[in-house]
Image (cartoon, rainbow, N blue to C red):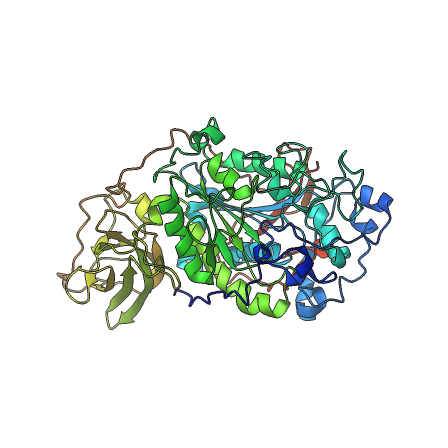
Length: 604
């Protein structure tokens, strides 16, 4: 269901492009706004000795107000009855490395899967993003083999989650809240002239794409948007660049990215990246360094609109509300260099998001947005233009299942506050329902139904659908089965898959039915009639390991991250634990459950 959009007015707009530095209270940066490119921030001296700043570790950072605050803190949200299920993450005495989660079904891992990489914590003062992406992981694993959509998404998608890209900075942001710490804590060789509260590099200006453009970053080492001494000069930047390069297809990566900015990726690409920030309630996509649409703008905007239909965000993008330029950031790098669909979210309405608002608004509105991105990871530019199957339902009526749904080419893309988009008005031409086989895996041998339009004909961009399934006459075995639905529009675009489970109690012998059981004349994985501009010529295989259940220390890795590798349980009755609002980094916890296989630690 699309979210009703609340448009920002001039009098209530909170992003920094409407303000200058004098607008911000000296002791409350929360009066500011989006942190995607903020560099008008008050300067604060850190209330700790410089020697402690130089040798960061958890036990050396004062936690003077962590448990006494109005933000997403332990005392605000934690239920004492839930703490027994948590195990503490240990920290390296040498450094705090990025934290990531990789989630997929190890029994079905191959390079043909779509890949979805989502990151949080680039800017440490943004408390909500790491919590959101962690909750996303818990949501997937808690509902695997229970929710049909989540089950197929986990089975068919490699989902990589980095909760804290900038963990050292997070220690400052938690321990010294008045600092509103944004950068990393690398003092660098440029410290001279900067106070202790001004050192570091803005990780989101340090990526190796259009780096050095002072129109969207600062070359002043004391500034909050300081770009660093060189492209990818920071370890946090290099870790994320290398990790993304290792999982995304090599054939999609550009050989000369900045000279190839006007070369379209095409609709045949796979995989998607999303970076989560706060705050301002925006969805953004390339280009970010310049107010100019990319050659793939139609596909980027179509999917960006659909993502925003769930959380009510405005579009921060060329041709819309281009708030201000940002150069050397994650989003432009992933699209411009690695050749994947790339997006960012600015969630919530505060850096130190309140627990009440996070749990009542931020989490429930942004989880579906992340789910939709995962749903289209296999072919984001193509599937994002196709029609969506909504409200898929299967109800037992007498001796058959009545399966109903709606298909729409316009509902999610034609969002409130924006004119109708050209990908959102095509007629629905067919909707197919597959028994126990995902359309991507269909080989012509499985049972398939053509769903029927309730009004008798496919003549609109919005259709109500139904079909009757007599399980006994088709010889469907007893037990649980999965139905997969996919729609096609008049331009030939297939949309994302929707799924539902059905339970068949027993098989009875009944007379044959004349209800349709025909097979489609073309495979549902065929390319749309609008052929892709470019097709990847090579993919990179990713093979996850099976880990033991105890904590293990590994030798140094070329991609140093704190990795939680999980495999979902097959038991619908598996125990699940509720997470608490905001996992402070020093007290960061992993919920103990039947689907946690192991924790590995890599050191820098």
